[in-house]
Length: 252
Image (spheres, rainbow, N blue to C red):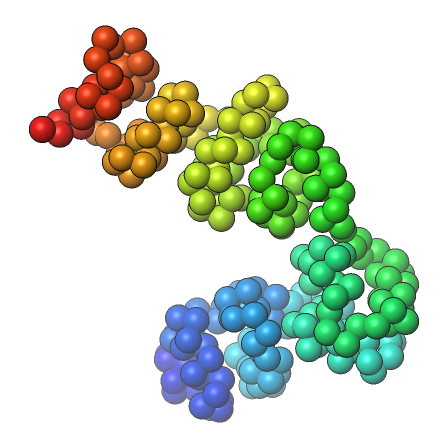
């Protein structure tokens, strides 16, 4: 059944279509928390969710505490809703610094919110502690929010992750992934194997960078006629690395 055929408002249909949801079956397993990240920042999703919940097309998330079910001042409730927070658990998705800058959240309501979080065992984490820890390893500043989102607060948190995990932690930014990888390597953090290999897992950084810049090759699987041994052997060739790579790629 198509969402277009549901007995809901045109606004709700248009909003769902804008994020690629066209079939009712695609709503299965979705709720406010899973949907909010799919919409633009500051998009008012509440009326659409309320409408879908009312008609039974969308179920509220299980084991979640709604801001409507917690005694709080109207100002605090409005501030949370205006900033897209409908359930207390969502607060753990935001750095404390960002929460304190929520629109219409004053000093008094901030203290009220902190008290509510303590009562419901919601931890408000700070991105500052992540920055203070990783600064000494020269991590790029832009990666700190990404580390926060993935609950990474120290080098050991990278253990048992693969380079591919790192790529997604870095929001699919290959250059950033490569930079973090070599910082981890310098600090003896060894990532686990996965079904493919990024070029930077095989070659020194300058060579991996060159291969990416010149040929947009990031993974070994992009070079079907070449294996890991061939790549490593290219480093000891009397010819320049660029020449050897062109030969491996059969570029005239």
